Length: 478
Figure 1: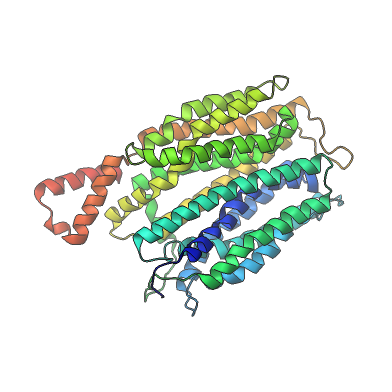
Figure 2 (figure 1 turned 90 degrees about the vertical axis):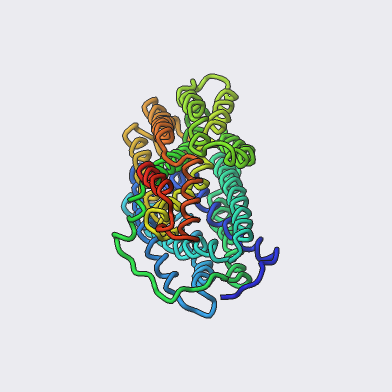
């Protein structure tokens, strides 16, 4: 592979690639279920089932694609051929995903069949691009400082992308609901416009970035045993629990807020999401400073009582009260939730260190893969439950004549309970899991010190006191 320092242009091109990763996921999370129910006319439980099946397929594909790209050997390297060729498939898949086929069909089966086919196709091409791109983040440079710097830049781009691809589509949906734009304009903006913008950096990555990490001689073999091996580490199991509580809460909130704004408060989903993301962005530099002086698990759980109390208020807030109250409660929820939202992936390297101390190898890809795998499956099930709750509560689907129907009281209660109740339950669980999480800053520092000694001296060189300390540490985190 090629060596040499990265130029500024290459850093920005690579970081821009996560506009697709961060942006497309946010856009789909906020808009796709309500697109299926309110535009295509699919029953909520059936629409959520489509998303669940597609996410399950996506979860299975991720580790397989990791092995395929690990074992690839081309003149362009292992990752870039998939990113470049997959970019054009992404455009087709994203445009197909939002194609308003089925709006005039009577058959729920026909509507669901096309939606499932298009989402399965999209998730497949998403995997073809995203897994190699994530792997490339560890291979874009062999200089640790340079690699860290470009990945921080990538995180900034992903956060901005999440904001843009949450706020703009919700504005487009509101404009469509209000009759300001028609279905054709909705499709060209969402399906084609965003699709084109997503693939531009992917094409540039294929042509103008380099893979600098050396390629090992041996190829990877996949087995279920090797895939689940990280779960043998107690610290990693704890991190998975924290990550699931946070990420599924965010998925359900993002999916439910459009229904909540349209039918419960008659407010603006754009304002709700803008407040939530805006507070997260403001809190990021504060939390980034705190991680060096405060235990990361404390940052995770410290604000959760505020988030839970505020979101109970969101769920119970009377529809005839001033709308500003729900906006204030949403901002308070975001303030309390910020630590949990941002700190999981900051803890991740510490959990990988613990795994390396236990197993003697640093299989970062396996740890990342299992977090993604479990998260996608759990998220799929959670969204299915949300859709089922809508169907059971008597949700009335919009029609051309009535784009925003009046919902019965049971449906209003179902929306409140599905969104607010799920968030409160999950984040209460997250609070207690964080309190019991074993990786404090002190223990993480001990892990790194023992890894250093192992690298420089070997385990046999440890003195009796260090051996006893190591055994105590293993009992605490393994």
